[in-house]
Image (cartoon, rainbow, N blue to C red; front, side):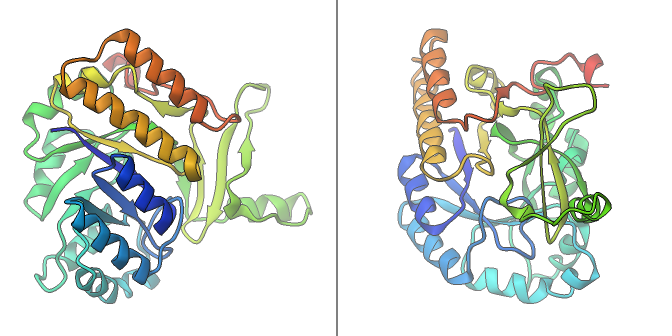
Length: 306
Protein backbone atom coordinates (compact mmCIF):
# COMPACT_ATOMS: atom_id res chain seq x y z
CA UNK A 1 0.00 0.00 0.00
CA UNK A 2 1.40 3.37 -1.06
CA UNK A 3 1.57 6.05 1.64
CA UNK A 4 1.64 9.79 0.97
CA UNK A 5 3.65 11.75 3.55
CA UNK A 6 3.28 15.52 3.29
CA UNK A 7 4.56 18.53 5.20
CA UNK A 8 2.08 21.09 6.50
CA UNK A 9 2.48 24.79 7.22
CA UNK A 10 -0.54 25.22 9.51
CA UNK A 11 -3.39 23.49 11.29
CA UNK A 12 -5.85 24.58 8.61
CA UNK A 13 -3.68 23.37 5.75
CA UNK A 14 -3.13 20.11 7.62
CA UNK A 15 -6.86 19.43 7.73
CA UNK A 16 -7.11 20.05 3.98
CA UNK A 17 -4.14 17.80 3.26
CA UNK A 18 -5.70 14.93 5.16
CA UNK A 19 -8.89 15.36 3.14
CA UNK A 20 -6.83 15.55 -0.07
CA UNK A 21 -5.34 12.11 0.49
CA UNK A 22 -2.24 12.54 2.66
CA UNK A 23 -1.79 9.54 4.98
CA UNK A 24 0.84 11.07 7.25
CA UNK A 25 1.50 14.73 7.98
CA UNK A 26 4.83 16.21 9.00
CA UNK A 27 4.49 19.16 11.37
CA UNK A 28 7.15 21.14 13.16
CA UNK A 29 7.99 23.81 15.69
CA UNK A 30 10.88 26.24 15.68
CA UNK A 31 13.43 24.66 18.02
CA UNK A 32 13.57 21.10 16.68
CA UNK A 33 11.94 21.28 13.24
CA UNK A 34 14.35 21.77 10.34
CA UNK A 35 13.15 23.38 7.09
CA UNK A 36 9.46 22.96 7.87
CA UNK A 37 7.05 25.24 5.96
CA UNK A 38 5.43 26.59 9.13
CA UNK A 39 5.56 26.30 12.90
CA UNK A 40 2.67 24.83 14.88
CA UNK A 41 2.04 25.29 18.59
CA UNK A 42 1.66 22.28 20.89
CA UNK A 43 -2.11 22.89 21.02
CA UNK A 44 -2.30 22.91 17.22
CA UNK A 45 -0.23 19.73 16.97
CA UNK A 46 -2.50 18.05 19.52
CA UNK A 47 -5.62 19.07 17.61
CA UNK A 48 -4.19 17.82 14.33
CA UNK A 49 -3.21 14.51 15.95
CA UNK A 50 -6.77 14.02 17.16
CA UNK A 51 -8.21 14.77 13.71
CA UNK A 52 -5.71 12.50 11.96
CA UNK A 53 -6.38 9.62 14.35
CA UNK A 54 -10.11 9.93 13.77
CA UNK A 55 -9.39 9.44 10.06
CA UNK A 56 -7.01 6.52 10.65
CA UNK A 57 -4.00 8.66 9.70
CA UNK A 58 -0.83 9.79 11.44
CA UNK A 59 1.12 12.88 12.46
CA UNK A 60 4.91 13.02 12.40
CA UNK A 61 6.75 15.78 14.26
CA UNK A 62 9.95 17.05 12.64
CA UNK A 63 12.81 16.82 15.13
CA UNK A 64 15.45 16.63 12.40
CA UNK A 65 17.50 19.67 13.36
CA UNK A 66 21.20 19.54 14.21
CA UNK A 67 21.07 20.01 17.96
CA UNK A 68 23.76 22.10 19.62
CA UNK A 69 24.12 22.23 23.39
CA UNK A 70 21.50 24.91 23.94
CA UNK A 71 18.87 22.87 22.09
CA UNK A 72 19.82 19.42 23.33
CA UNK A 73 19.09 20.68 26.85
CA UNK A 74 15.50 21.23 25.75
CA UNK A 75 15.14 17.76 24.25
CA UNK A 76 13.77 15.85 27.24
CA UNK A 77 10.93 18.30 27.96
CA UNK A 78 10.17 18.38 24.22
CA UNK A 79 9.95 14.60 23.99
CA UNK A 80 7.72 14.46 27.07
CA UNK A 81 5.37 17.00 25.46
CA UNK A 82 5.22 15.10 22.18
CA UNK A 83 4.48 11.82 23.96
CA UNK A 84 1.68 13.54 25.86
CA UNK A 85 0.24 14.79 22.56
CA UNK A 86 0.27 11.18 21.26
CA UNK A 87 2.18 12.01 18.09
CA UNK A 88 2.83 8.90 16.01
CA UNK A 89 6.45 9.45 14.98
CA UNK A 90 9.32 11.88 14.89
CA UNK A 91 11.76 12.66 12.10
CA UNK A 92 15.23 12.48 13.68
CA UNK A 93 18.77 12.84 12.38
CA UNK A 94 20.79 13.95 15.40
CA UNK A 95 22.37 11.06 17.27
CA UNK A 96 22.21 13.03 20.52
CA UNK A 97 18.42 12.89 20.40
CA UNK A 98 18.51 9.18 19.55
CA UNK A 99 20.77 8.62 22.58
CA UNK A 100 18.21 10.31 24.84
CA UNK A 101 15.42 8.19 23.36
CA UNK A 102 17.15 4.99 24.47
CA UNK A 103 15.37 5.72 27.72
CA UNK A 104 11.81 4.33 27.31
CA UNK A 105 10.42 7.38 29.10
CA UNK A 106 11.46 9.51 26.13
CA UNK A 107 11.24 7.09 23.22
CA UNK A 108 8.97 7.86 20.28
CA UNK A 109 9.16 5.80 17.04
CA UNK A 110 11.13 7.78 14.49
CA UNK A 111 11.99 8.09 10.82
CA UNK A 112 15.74 8.36 10.48
CA UNK A 113 16.45 11.55 8.50
CA UNK A 114 20.10 12.50 8.27
CA UNK A 115 19.72 14.16 4.86
CA UNK A 116 22.60 13.34 2.47
CA UNK A 117 24.02 10.67 4.81
CA UNK A 118 21.27 8.07 4.30
CA UNK A 119 22.60 6.26 1.23
CA UNK A 120 22.81 2.53 2.01
CA UNK A 121 20.74 -0.35 3.33
CA UNK A 122 23.47 -1.03 5.89
CA UNK A 123 23.00 2.37 7.45
CA UNK A 124 19.22 2.01 7.48
CA UNK A 125 19.44 -1.42 9.11
CA UNK A 126 21.91 -0.11 11.69
CA UNK A 127 19.48 2.54 12.93
CA UNK A 128 16.69 -0.02 13.14
CA UNK A 129 18.62 -1.43 16.12
CA UNK A 130 18.23 1.93 17.84
CA UNK A 131 14.51 2.45 17.38
CA UNK A 132 14.07 3.75 13.83
CA UNK A 133 10.88 2.55 12.12
CA UNK A 134 11.63 4.00 8.65
CA UNK A 135 14.32 6.04 6.88
CA UNK A 136 14.19 8.99 4.50
CA UNK A 137 16.63 8.16 1.75
CA UNK A 138 19.01 10.86 0.53
CA UNK A 139 17.79 12.72 -2.57
CA UNK A 140 21.16 12.00 -4.16
CA UNK A 141 20.47 8.25 -4.39
CA UNK A 142 19.45 7.47 -8.00
CA UNK A 143 16.95 4.85 -9.05
CA UNK A 144 19.63 2.38 -10.17
CA UNK A 145 20.92 2.34 -6.59
CA UNK A 146 17.49 2.53 -5.00
CA UNK A 147 16.28 -0.65 -6.68
CA UNK A 148 19.22 -2.49 -5.11
CA UNK A 149 18.84 -0.82 -1.72
CA UNK A 150 15.11 -1.22 -1.04
CA UNK A 151 14.98 -5.07 -1.02
CA UNK A 152 17.88 -5.20 1.46
CA UNK A 153 16.51 -2.54 3.81
CA UNK A 154 14.82 -3.91 6.91
CA UNK A 155 12.77 -0.73 7.32
CA UNK A 156 10.38 1.12 5.00
CA UNK A 157 12.29 3.51 2.76
CA UNK A 158 10.78 6.98 2.39
CA UNK A 159 11.51 8.62 -0.98
CA UNK A 160 10.97 12.28 -1.81
CA UNK A 161 8.82 12.64 -4.92
CA UNK A 162 8.06 16.37 -4.87
CA UNK A 163 9.42 19.65 -3.55
CA UNK A 164 12.51 21.64 -2.71
CA UNK A 165 15.85 19.89 -2.20
CA UNK A 166 18.32 21.34 0.29
CA UNK A 167 21.91 21.12 -0.96
CA UNK A 168 23.71 23.04 1.80
CA UNK A 169 23.21 24.13 5.38
CA UNK A 170 25.52 26.26 7.49
CA UNK A 171 25.08 27.02 11.18
CA UNK A 172 26.45 30.50 10.41
CA UNK A 173 24.18 33.45 9.58
CA UNK A 174 25.56 33.84 6.07
CA UNK A 175 22.92 36.27 4.86
CA UNK A 176 23.47 38.57 7.83
CA UNK A 177 27.20 38.40 7.19
CA UNK A 178 26.76 39.20 3.49
CA UNK A 179 24.53 42.21 4.03
CA UNK A 180 26.85 43.51 6.74
CA UNK A 181 29.77 43.15 4.32
CA UNK A 182 28.08 45.12 1.52
CA UNK A 183 26.79 47.63 4.11
CA UNK A 184 23.12 47.19 3.21
CA UNK A 185 20.17 46.96 5.55
CA UNK A 186 19.25 43.38 6.38
CA UNK A 187 16.04 41.89 5.01
CA UNK A 188 13.59 39.44 6.55
CA UNK A 189 15.59 36.33 5.76
CA UNK A 190 12.90 33.88 6.86
CA UNK A 191 10.45 34.89 4.11
CA UNK A 192 12.18 32.48 1.69
CA UNK A 193 12.08 34.92 -1.23
CA UNK A 194 15.82 35.25 -1.95
CA UNK A 195 17.92 33.49 -4.59
CA UNK A 196 21.64 33.04 -5.26
CA UNK A 197 23.16 33.00 -8.73
CA UNK A 198 26.58 31.66 -9.70
CA UNK A 199 28.93 34.19 -11.32
CA UNK A 200 28.64 33.94 -15.09
CA UNK A 201 25.71 31.51 -14.90
CA UNK A 202 22.57 33.57 -15.31
CA UNK A 203 20.32 30.49 -15.41
CA UNK A 204 21.17 29.53 -11.82
CA UNK A 205 18.87 30.61 -9.00
CA UNK A 206 19.48 28.75 -5.76
CA UNK A 207 16.83 29.54 -3.16
CA UNK A 208 18.34 30.65 0.15
CA UNK A 209 16.97 31.63 3.54
CA UNK A 210 18.13 31.95 7.13
CA UNK A 211 16.49 31.02 10.42
CA UNK A 212 17.45 29.99 13.95
CA UNK A 213 19.12 26.84 12.56
CA UNK A 214 21.42 28.79 10.23
CA UNK A 215 21.44 29.29 6.47
CA UNK A 216 19.82 26.91 3.97
CA UNK A 217 20.52 26.70 0.22
CA UNK A 218 18.39 24.71 -2.22
CA UNK A 219 18.89 23.07 -5.60
CA UNK A 220 18.34 25.07 -8.76
CA UNK A 221 15.14 23.12 -9.49
CA UNK A 222 12.57 21.42 -7.29
CA UNK A 223 11.90 17.69 -7.50
CA UNK A 224 8.91 16.26 -9.38
CA UNK A 225 8.76 12.49 -9.95
CA UNK A 226 5.14 12.28 -11.09
CA UNK A 227 6.00 10.48 -14.34
CA UNK A 228 8.46 8.15 -12.58
CA UNK A 229 6.07 7.01 -9.81
CA UNK A 230 5.44 3.57 -11.39
CA UNK A 231 9.18 2.89 -11.15
CA UNK A 232 9.01 3.39 -7.39
CA UNK A 233 5.91 1.20 -7.12
CA UNK A 234 7.68 -1.57 -9.07
CA UNK A 235 10.42 -1.85 -6.43
CA UNK A 236 7.98 -1.39 -3.51
CA UNK A 237 9.36 1.98 -2.52
CA UNK A 238 5.87 2.80 -1.28
CA UNK A 239 6.38 5.75 1.06
CA UNK A 240 6.28 8.98 -0.96
CA UNK A 241 7.35 12.23 0.66
CA UNK A 242 6.07 15.57 -0.61
CA UNK A 243 7.73 18.77 0.64
CA UNK A 244 5.64 21.95 0.56
CA UNK A 245 8.29 24.36 1.82
CA UNK A 246 8.17 26.47 -1.36
CA UNK A 247 4.62 25.59 -2.46
CA UNK A 248 2.41 27.44 0.01
CA UNK A 249 -1.26 27.29 0.89
CA UNK A 250 -3.89 25.81 -1.38
CA UNK A 251 -1.35 25.18 -4.16
CA UNK A 252 0.29 22.44 -2.11
CA UNK A 253 -3.09 20.94 -1.26
CA UNK A 254 -3.74 20.69 -5.00
CA UNK A 255 -0.34 19.08 -5.56
CA UNK A 256 -1.08 16.41 -2.94
CA UNK A 257 -4.51 15.85 -4.50
CA UNK A 258 -2.88 15.13 -7.87
CA UNK A 259 -0.35 12.73 -6.33
CA UNK A 260 -3.24 10.97 -4.59
CA UNK A 261 -4.90 10.55 -7.98
CA UNK A 262 -1.68 9.10 -9.38
CA UNK A 263 -1.38 6.74 -6.41
CA UNK A 264 -4.93 5.49 -7.02
CA UNK A 265 -4.25 4.87 -10.71
CA UNK A 266 -1.08 2.91 -9.93
CA UNK A 267 -2.70 0.81 -7.21
CA UNK A 268 -5.56 -0.05 -9.58
CA UNK A 269 -3.14 -0.88 -12.42
CA UNK A 270 -4.69 1.90 -14.48
CA UNK A 271 -1.70 4.24 -14.78
CA UNK A 272 -0.55 4.93 -18.32
CA UNK A 273 2.18 7.28 -19.57
CA UNK A 274 -0.55 9.47 -21.08
CA UNK A 275 -2.52 9.77 -17.83
CA UNK A 276 0.60 10.47 -15.79
CA UNK A 277 1.65 13.12 -18.31
CA UNK A 278 -1.73 14.79 -17.85
CA UNK A 279 -1.34 14.72 -14.09
CA UNK A 280 2.18 16.09 -14.47
CA UNK A 281 0.77 19.09 -16.33
CA UNK A 282 -1.47 19.74 -13.34
CA UNK A 283 1.54 19.65 -11.01
CA UNK A 284 3.30 22.22 -13.18
CA UNK A 285 0.19 24.40 -13.07
CA UNK A 286 0.09 24.40 -9.26
CA UNK A 287 3.86 24.73 -8.79
CA UNK A 288 5.14 28.29 -8.09
CA UNK A 289 5.77 30.20 -11.32
CA UNK A 290 9.24 31.36 -10.24
CA UNK A 291 10.44 27.81 -9.59
CA UNK A 292 11.19 25.03 -12.08
CA UNK A 293 11.09 21.27 -11.58
CA UNK A 294 13.07 18.28 -12.79
CA UNK A 295 13.85 14.72 -11.69
CA UNK A 296 16.94 15.62 -9.65
CA UNK A 297 19.36 12.70 -9.26
CA UNK A 298 16.66 10.08 -9.80
CA UNK A 299 17.54 9.11 -13.38
CA UNK A 300 21.31 9.51 -13.04
CA UNK A 301 23.67 6.60 -13.53
CA UNK A 302 25.54 5.42 -10.45
CA UNK A 303 28.83 6.56 -11.98
CA UNK A 304 27.51 10.08 -12.54
CA UNK A 305 26.51 10.47 -8.89
CA UNK A 306 29.97 9.36 -7.74
